[in-house]
Length: 291
Image (cartoon, rainbow, N blue to C red):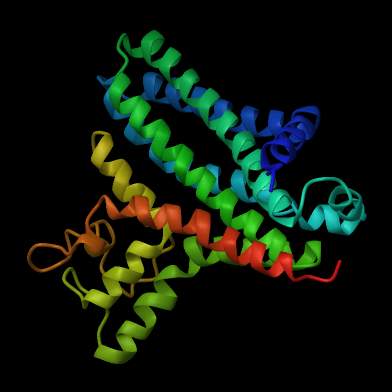
Protein backbone atom coordinates (compact mmCIF):
# COMPACT_ATOMS: atom_id res chain seq x y z
CA UNK A 1 0.00 0.00 0.00
CA UNK A 2 1.41 3.38 -1.04
CA UNK A 3 1.91 5.92 1.72
CA UNK A 4 0.88 9.51 1.13
CA UNK A 5 2.35 10.89 4.36
CA UNK A 6 4.84 13.09 2.51
CA UNK A 7 2.09 14.48 0.26
CA UNK A 8 -0.08 15.44 3.23
CA UNK A 9 2.95 16.89 5.04
CA UNK A 10 3.96 18.98 2.03
CA UNK A 11 0.46 20.41 1.62
CA UNK A 12 0.22 21.09 5.36
CA UNK A 13 3.53 22.97 5.36
CA UNK A 14 2.58 24.92 2.22
CA UNK A 15 -0.68 25.96 3.86
CA UNK A 16 1.22 27.10 6.96
CA UNK A 17 3.72 29.07 4.90
CA UNK A 18 0.87 30.98 3.26
CA UNK A 19 -0.71 31.74 6.62
CA UNK A 20 0.53 33.99 9.39
CA UNK A 21 1.33 31.01 11.65
CA UNK A 22 4.81 30.18 10.37
CA UNK A 23 5.89 33.79 10.16
CA UNK A 24 4.55 34.53 13.63
CA UNK A 25 6.52 31.59 15.07
CA UNK A 26 9.67 32.63 13.25
CA UNK A 27 9.24 36.21 14.44
CA UNK A 28 8.63 35.05 18.02
CA UNK A 29 11.67 32.79 18.31
CA UNK A 30 14.06 34.92 16.26
CA UNK A 31 12.96 38.03 18.12
CA UNK A 32 13.58 36.30 21.44
CA UNK A 33 17.11 35.37 20.35
CA UNK A 34 17.88 38.89 19.13
CA UNK A 35 16.59 40.49 22.33
CA UNK A 36 18.42 37.92 24.47
CA UNK A 37 21.79 38.37 22.80
CA UNK A 38 21.52 42.16 22.70
CA UNK A 39 20.44 42.37 26.34
CA UNK A 40 23.17 40.06 27.60
CA UNK A 41 25.84 41.85 25.56
CA UNK A 42 24.68 45.20 26.93
CA UNK A 43 24.08 44.20 30.59
CA UNK A 44 26.46 41.36 31.45
CA UNK A 45 30.16 42.18 31.60
CA UNK A 46 32.62 39.62 30.25
CA UNK A 47 29.95 37.10 29.22
CA UNK A 48 31.28 34.45 26.87
CA UNK A 49 29.53 33.09 23.77
CA UNK A 50 29.15 29.71 25.49
CA UNK A 51 27.53 31.23 28.57
CA UNK A 52 24.94 33.03 26.48
CA UNK A 53 23.57 29.70 25.28
CA UNK A 54 22.79 28.87 28.90
CA UNK A 55 20.89 32.13 29.27
CA UNK A 56 18.75 31.18 26.25
CA UNK A 57 17.62 27.99 27.96
CA UNK A 58 15.00 29.77 30.05
CA UNK A 59 13.08 31.58 27.28
CA UNK A 60 13.39 28.60 24.93
CA UNK A 61 11.79 26.18 27.38
CA UNK A 62 8.96 28.68 27.82
CA UNK A 63 8.26 29.74 24.23
CA UNK A 64 8.97 26.55 22.25
CA UNK A 65 6.27 24.39 23.93
CA UNK A 66 3.67 27.16 23.55
CA UNK A 67 4.55 27.62 19.88
CA UNK A 68 4.49 23.86 19.26
CA UNK A 69 1.13 23.35 20.97
CA UNK A 70 -0.42 26.23 19.02
CA UNK A 71 1.00 24.73 15.83
CA UNK A 72 -0.41 21.26 16.43
CA UNK A 73 -3.64 21.41 18.39
CA UNK A 74 -5.88 22.08 15.35
CA UNK A 75 -3.99 19.85 12.90
CA UNK A 76 -6.61 17.11 12.54
CA UNK A 77 -9.61 18.34 14.47
CA UNK A 78 -9.58 21.52 12.36
CA UNK A 79 -10.16 19.41 9.25
CA UNK A 80 -13.02 17.60 11.01
CA UNK A 81 -14.53 20.89 12.16
CA UNK A 82 -14.53 22.39 8.65
CA UNK A 83 -15.73 19.17 7.00
CA UNK A 84 -12.70 19.04 4.71
CA UNK A 85 -11.59 15.77 6.31
CA UNK A 86 -14.18 13.88 4.23
CA UNK A 87 -12.86 15.43 1.04
CA UNK A 88 -9.28 14.67 2.08
CA UNK A 89 -10.09 11.03 2.88
CA UNK A 90 -11.93 10.74 -0.42
CA UNK A 91 -8.56 11.18 -2.11
CA UNK A 92 -5.71 8.64 -1.93
CA UNK A 93 -4.53 9.53 1.63
CA UNK A 94 -5.96 7.27 4.33
CA UNK A 95 -6.37 8.06 8.04
CA UNK A 96 -2.81 7.05 8.92
CA UNK A 97 -1.50 9.31 6.14
CA UNK A 98 -3.54 12.19 7.50
CA UNK A 99 -2.39 11.88 11.12
CA UNK A 100 1.29 11.24 10.46
CA UNK A 101 1.40 13.57 7.48
CA UNK A 102 -0.02 16.34 9.65
CA UNK A 103 2.54 15.47 12.33
CA UNK A 104 5.39 15.70 9.82
CA UNK A 105 4.06 18.94 8.33
CA UNK A 106 3.56 20.68 11.68
CA UNK A 107 6.93 19.40 12.92
CA UNK A 108 8.52 20.97 9.84
CA UNK A 109 6.83 24.27 10.69
CA UNK A 110 8.17 24.40 14.24
CA UNK A 111 11.52 22.99 13.07
CA UNK A 112 11.89 25.80 10.54
CA UNK A 113 11.27 28.42 13.22
CA UNK A 114 13.76 26.80 15.61
CA UNK A 115 16.40 26.41 12.88
CA UNK A 116 16.17 30.08 11.92
CA UNK A 117 16.36 31.08 15.58
CA UNK A 118 19.62 29.16 16.02
CA UNK A 119 21.06 30.48 12.76
CA UNK A 120 20.34 33.93 14.16
CA UNK A 121 22.07 32.94 17.41
CA UNK A 122 25.12 31.83 15.42
CA UNK A 123 25.34 35.18 13.60
CA UNK A 124 24.79 37.26 16.74
CA UNK A 125 27.29 35.21 18.71
CA UNK A 126 29.94 36.12 16.16
CA UNK A 127 28.91 39.80 16.05
CA UNK A 128 28.53 40.46 19.77
CA UNK A 129 31.03 38.06 21.32
CA UNK A 130 33.53 37.41 18.53
CA UNK A 131 33.22 33.63 18.84
CA UNK A 132 30.84 30.82 17.94
CA UNK A 133 30.62 27.69 20.16
CA UNK A 134 29.60 25.75 17.05
CA UNK A 135 29.48 22.24 18.48
CA UNK A 136 27.46 23.28 21.53
CA UNK A 137 25.22 25.47 19.37
CA UNK A 138 24.41 22.60 17.01
CA UNK A 139 23.83 20.15 19.87
CA UNK A 140 21.60 22.62 21.70
CA UNK A 141 19.72 23.37 18.48
CA UNK A 142 19.07 19.69 17.77
CA UNK A 143 17.92 19.14 21.36
CA UNK A 144 15.57 22.12 21.13
CA UNK A 145 14.25 20.75 17.84
CA UNK A 146 13.46 17.42 19.51
CA UNK A 147 11.86 19.30 22.40
CA UNK A 148 9.63 21.29 20.07
CA UNK A 149 8.71 18.30 17.91
CA UNK A 150 7.81 16.33 21.06
CA UNK A 151 5.20 18.95 21.93
CA UNK A 152 3.99 18.96 18.31
CA UNK A 153 3.55 15.18 18.50
CA UNK A 154 1.58 15.55 21.71
CA UNK A 155 -0.65 18.28 20.25
CA UNK A 156 -1.29 16.45 16.96
CA UNK A 157 -2.09 13.28 18.90
CA UNK A 158 -4.65 15.16 20.97
CA UNK A 159 -6.05 16.79 17.83
CA UNK A 160 -6.53 13.38 16.21
CA UNK A 161 -8.05 11.83 19.33
CA UNK A 162 -10.89 14.31 19.91
CA UNK A 163 -13.79 15.58 17.84
CA UNK A 164 -13.98 19.25 18.77
CA UNK A 165 -11.67 22.25 18.89
CA UNK A 166 -12.70 22.99 22.47
CA UNK A 167 -11.64 19.57 23.74
CA UNK A 168 -8.33 19.78 21.93
CA UNK A 169 -7.58 23.22 23.33
CA UNK A 170 -8.62 22.22 26.85
CA UNK A 171 -6.33 19.18 26.86
CA UNK A 172 -3.24 20.90 25.46
CA UNK A 173 -3.64 23.97 27.70
CA UNK A 174 -4.37 21.80 30.74
CA UNK A 175 -1.35 19.61 30.02
CA UNK A 176 0.94 22.63 29.66
CA UNK A 177 -0.33 23.98 32.96
CA UNK A 178 0.32 20.58 34.52
CA UNK A 179 3.94 20.58 33.34
CA UNK A 180 4.61 24.18 34.35
CA UNK A 181 2.30 25.18 37.19
CA UNK A 182 1.00 22.01 38.84
CA UNK A 183 3.81 19.46 38.58
CA UNK A 184 5.11 19.93 42.13
CA UNK A 185 1.59 19.70 43.55
CA UNK A 186 0.74 16.41 41.81
CA UNK A 187 4.12 14.80 42.57
CA UNK A 188 5.46 16.28 45.83
CA UNK A 189 1.95 16.61 47.28
CA UNK A 190 1.28 12.84 47.39
CA UNK A 191 4.88 12.31 48.53
CA UNK A 192 4.25 14.50 51.59
CA UNK A 193 1.03 12.62 52.35
CA UNK A 194 2.82 9.26 52.15
CA UNK A 195 5.99 10.10 54.06
CA UNK A 196 4.93 12.99 56.27
CA UNK A 197 7.48 15.34 54.74
CA UNK A 198 8.35 16.80 51.39
CA UNK A 199 10.90 15.14 49.09
CA UNK A 200 14.46 16.05 50.05
CA UNK A 201 17.60 15.91 47.97
CA UNK A 202 17.51 12.08 48.07
CA UNK A 203 13.82 11.12 47.82
CA UNK A 204 12.24 7.78 46.96
CA UNK A 205 13.06 6.48 43.49
CA UNK A 206 9.47 6.58 42.23
CA UNK A 207 9.40 10.32 42.81
CA UNK A 208 12.56 10.81 40.76
CA UNK A 209 11.02 8.77 37.94
CA UNK A 210 8.00 11.10 37.92
CA UNK A 211 10.31 14.11 37.84
CA UNK A 212 12.15 12.66 34.84
CA UNK A 213 8.85 12.25 32.95
CA UNK A 214 8.19 15.99 32.81
CA UNK A 215 9.37 17.05 29.33
CA UNK A 216 10.62 20.36 30.74
CA UNK A 217 12.84 18.49 33.19
CA UNK A 218 14.06 16.15 30.46
CA UNK A 219 14.95 19.10 28.22
CA UNK A 220 16.71 21.19 30.85
CA UNK A 221 18.64 18.20 32.20
CA UNK A 222 19.96 17.43 28.72
CA UNK A 223 20.61 21.12 27.97
CA UNK A 224 22.66 21.50 31.14
CA UNK A 225 24.97 18.79 29.83
CA UNK A 226 25.57 20.84 26.67
CA UNK A 227 25.89 24.48 27.72
CA UNK A 228 27.88 26.22 30.42
CA UNK A 229 26.01 26.64 33.69
CA UNK A 230 22.79 25.11 34.93
CA UNK A 231 19.38 25.48 33.30
CA UNK A 232 16.67 24.68 35.87
CA UNK A 233 13.20 23.75 34.60
CA UNK A 234 10.70 26.60 34.53
CA UNK A 235 8.10 25.12 36.90
CA UNK A 236 6.18 26.77 39.71
CA UNK A 237 7.47 26.06 43.21
CA UNK A 238 5.12 25.76 46.19
CA UNK A 239 7.64 24.92 48.90
CA UNK A 240 6.77 21.22 49.06
CA UNK A 241 10.41 20.46 48.29
CA UNK A 242 13.47 22.55 49.00
CA UNK A 243 14.79 25.02 46.45
CA UNK A 244 18.13 23.19 46.49
CA UNK A 245 16.44 19.92 45.54
CA UNK A 246 14.42 21.54 42.75
CA UNK A 247 17.63 22.75 41.08
CA UNK A 248 19.17 19.24 40.96
CA UNK A 249 18.70 16.62 38.25
CA UNK A 250 17.06 13.27 39.08
CA UNK A 251 20.45 11.53 38.69
CA UNK A 252 22.08 13.93 41.15
CA UNK A 253 19.36 13.22 43.71
CA UNK A 254 19.74 9.45 43.57
CA UNK A 255 21.74 7.90 46.41
CA UNK A 256 24.52 6.02 44.62
CA UNK A 257 24.94 5.34 40.93
CA UNK A 258 21.72 6.30 39.17
CA UNK A 259 19.91 3.59 37.15
CA UNK A 260 19.71 4.13 33.41
CA UNK A 261 16.18 5.57 33.55
CA UNK A 262 17.37 8.43 35.80
CA UNK A 263 20.52 9.27 33.90
CA UNK A 264 20.71 12.44 31.83
CA UNK A 265 20.65 10.72 28.42
CA UNK A 266 17.31 9.09 29.25
CA UNK A 267 15.72 12.49 28.71
CA UNK A 268 15.96 11.75 24.98
CA UNK A 269 13.77 8.67 25.50
CA UNK A 270 11.30 10.77 27.49
CA UNK A 271 11.02 13.38 24.73
CA UNK A 272 10.65 10.68 22.07
CA UNK A 273 7.90 9.16 24.21
CA UNK A 274 6.01 12.46 24.32
CA UNK A 275 6.36 12.63 20.53
CA UNK A 276 5.30 9.10 19.62
CA UNK A 277 2.91 7.79 22.27
CA UNK A 278 0.27 10.57 22.01
CA UNK A 279 0.50 10.46 18.20
CA UNK A 280 -0.11 6.70 18.18
CA UNK A 281 -2.99 6.98 20.64
CA UNK A 282 -4.46 9.80 18.57
CA UNK A 283 -4.19 7.72 15.40
CA UNK A 284 -5.84 4.74 17.13
CA UNK A 285 -8.83 6.85 18.19
CA UNK A 286 -9.03 8.68 14.85
CA UNK A 287 -8.93 5.42 12.90
CA UNK A 288 -12.06 4.28 14.74
CA UNK A 289 -13.89 7.60 14.80
CA UNK A 290 -17.20 8.03 12.99
CA UNK A 291 -16.64 10.98 10.69
